Structure formats: C-alpha cells, structure tokens
Image (cartoon, each protein chain N blue to C red):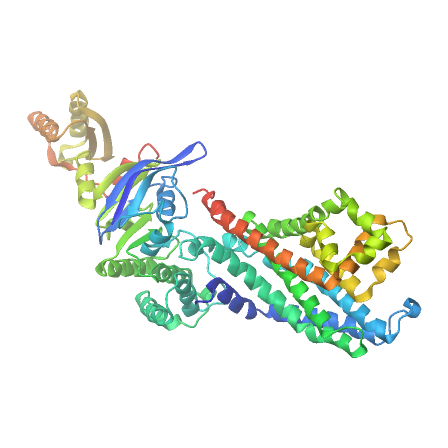
Length: 303
Length: 313
C-alpha cells in the first residue's frame, strides 16, 4: 500500500524547514525547565508536598502545560494546510489528480499530527523524570501521552476543517481557535443545562454510592462530556492528584463536586482513554466534513 | 477524443457558458481563443473536473467528465493559467509527488520523471528546488506534471502567459513534440496569432458563446470574404484623382465605408461578394480613375480576432 503522498511530502517539506527544529527545541526546553524547577524544590513549600506528592503534581502540571501548548500550536500550524494551498494556487493541481478529497484532508491532518506527535514523543523523557520521585506509574504516563496524542489529532482536524472552509490562512487560524472554544463550550452544555439528577442522588446516598461500579458511574456521566478535551485533562489530573475533590468539599459547588466524585468512582484514567477515543471520532467526523467542503469551496470559485 | 455537448455554466445569474458544443478529434492540437471573460477557463475547469456544469455534458474518450470524475481525471492532464509550486521540493520530488497522487508505481514514477524532465528540457535542474526556478521553467515543469500520468487529453490554460519570447518559443517546441507523440491538446489563449501557428483547429468563444470552430484556413477564408478592398491610385494622377475616386465610390450603394489610409490608398468596406467587387472596379475604370492596384486587404489573425469578437471590442 502506498503511503499518503500528501503526508509524506508535506512531512519532507516541514522537516526541511529550520522553524520545525526550533519549535521542537523550544517545546522540549520549556517543559524540561518546568519539570526541573518543580522537581528541584523551587516551588513554594506551602503546598505541604513531600517527594511522593511532587511527582504526580509535576506530571499533572506537565500534562496541563502540554495540553495548553498543543491547543495553541495546532491551529496555527494547520490553518494554512488547505487555505494555504488555495492561496498558493496549488489546490487545483491536487484536486485534478486521482487522490480523493478525503485522502488529501487525511494527509493534511496526519502531517500536522505527525509533528505534534513528534513534540509529544520528544517530551516523553521529560515526563519520565516524574518517575524518579515515585507516585507516578509508567501506565499513567502512557495514558497521558495517548490522551495528548488524541488532543493533537483533534486540534489538527479542527485546523484542517477550518482551513478547508476559509479562503485565507489568517481567517482560518482565528476560526480554528473559535471552533475549539465552541467544542469546549458545546460539550459542556449537558453539564450546565441537562445535568442528570441521578448523579446527585447517587452521590448524596452513601449506600448507593458505595455500591456503584466504575461501569455504572461512567454510564451516568453525560456522553457529550467525553468529547470535551478539557474534561479529559481534568480526569487525568484528578487521577494523579485527587485534589480536586478535596478543593471543592464543602464549598457548595454541588454539580462539579458530584461529577468529580463520579469521575473518581468511574476510574479517571479509563475516562481519559474514552475521551481520547471520543476525540479521535470527532477528528474523523471533521475530516469527512472537510473532505466534502474542499471540493465545494473550489467549485464555488469564479472564473 | 473530446466532445462537448450543450455545456452551460451560470455563476449566480451571470451566464459564463451558453450551450457550448464542440468536438476535437484524436491527436489534434486545438486552440481555444477568446477575449478575457469569454468562458475559456470555465470550460477547461469543467473538463478538468474542478467544476460541475449547470447543464450539458462533456466526454473525454467516451468518459463523461461530469459524472465519472475519477475515471476522467486519469485521461486528462490539466495545467491552469495561474499556479503555485511547493517550496522545499526539488524538481524530481515535485514530479514524484504528483506521480504518487496518481498512484503510479515506483519504477514507473522514476522512468516517467526522467522522460518528462528531458521533454521539458529540465533534466539538468532535476535536483534544484522548484521555487528557485524561473517562471518559464516553472511553466515547463508544470507541463511535465500534467503529463505525469500519461493522459490522452492535455488541457493547457494560457500556458505561455507571462513568458518572454524565448520561453514562448521553447513552449511551442514542446507542444509540437506532444502533437508528434499523439496527444490531443486543448490550449487556450487570448492571442489568436500565437495559437494559429501551431494549432490544427481553433474555437473562438465570446461571451460564453461559440463564434467559430474550424481550421485556421477556414477562419481566414471566412474572414477574407468580409475583408475590405484596398484601392491604390497612381501617384502621378494627383490629389484630384483621389477626390474623384472618393466621389465615385460614394455613389455606389453597396459601399458602406471609405477610409483614406494613405495619400493614394483608399480602404473601402462593401456589402456583397465578388460580383460587387467586380462592379466597383468596372465603375472606377469606366470613369478613367487611375487605379493601379485593387485587392482585398489581407486579414491577419489579430484583425480576424478583433473582427470576430468586435461587439466585445
């Protein structure tokens, strides 16, 4: 089977660029400095941390930092994937070949994903520093990496989708950030408007809560939340630190508190994996939509 | 090879193509001429499967381009009027990339790449970056790209636009070679003389409508029938003879326009064929006007083009 030419040749072009090397170096250096700072005890000691707690905290913060960087970098990287082809007037040359629209879009998404994956993989040794202090398992690091890869894929898909809709790279970049925010907001809607009362009922009924299985807890959470990358990240952090529940106890944040307890019961890492699956599914849907739009937008072009 | 049947394309309410029908035989080099906005690029984009028509169909070697896009793309090579290139790719990689897009195997890719670089005389630029090439070289490379899957029909939208005379000559040479290779080529331009030198047949479009379709000779014959008459008078006869000739011509009902091109050269437009010409000449000679030359003004293709698309002009 022939490798997607869009993927392979875009990767060649990207890896020949000096900017790519700079991005990788900057990304890893920033994470390394953050990790070393935390681990060497330069953080404030009023968080009553001992060494066993410092590892999970470091890992959780590294995950959050990577998550933020990916969300910021991916749209900027992908905004020109299709719109840039239009601007360069190379899209027509691609569309007249036997490469289908979906293959073009998939190539563009995977090409961007490949660089983001490279960043994540390059940062793996930094994450593994947390293993030194204990409190973090290799499985947790792997699940965190899987989740970040899924976020990278989803962000790339959003970027390519917007790029296939917009004619200009700049507009596409702005639209990508807006769409990411919208995805975050829309997938939180059930939490705000249609919050399942049964969750609260179970949490405040000690007997029922004690009997609740992880599968049962997962089934009770609103399904749309699994498409929220932020929710997945919170699950990973909660799974590492279990501090979120402590922070909210007795502060009257009922729904959030109940959800955290549900997350605990449902096994945070498993939820993060499901979230990763949801994001991969979302990426596939966006890729399909982009493939449909790419030709329509070209057809709409006037003489 | 190519059959276009009542092809129509509307952009909103604006009709870009109005029921264009056309046939191009196998192995022909067919010119597509028209002023800007005539519908050339629209027709070519439809044929390249980049755009669906509003109505009508087009067949390339029996394949309906409006319905069987994938199959048609294998048979059509398309070079747009404006195109960009990828930076950070060498000429060889550029061709290899598009060959992969056409799902051509590794051995065939390598062979075609070498052959095409030689055809477009870029074999010595094989390992140079595409964005470092001159415009003419990029045009030739793009032509090689459009041939990478060995298409039966080649659609070239203004391939020589923006080129210097040397690059144009090189492009013409390559097109002649393609004709010798048996490719059917549809080539557009808004400069008729440029195409007339190399094309077997021509189609002239204006405002989305077919104005003429046929060979260059047929076009010239058709236009020569309407060509003005050049009447040269003997210089020794003086200005009075010219005035007398103008007076005489004005009396003839079939003369529509008289222009004094030079002191002793009159250009006359008339309605009618050879019999009217003969009558005019007879009348001038009968009145002892010293006519020393009387012939149809030669119509060059630039004039023909202006004549055919005169409403637009």
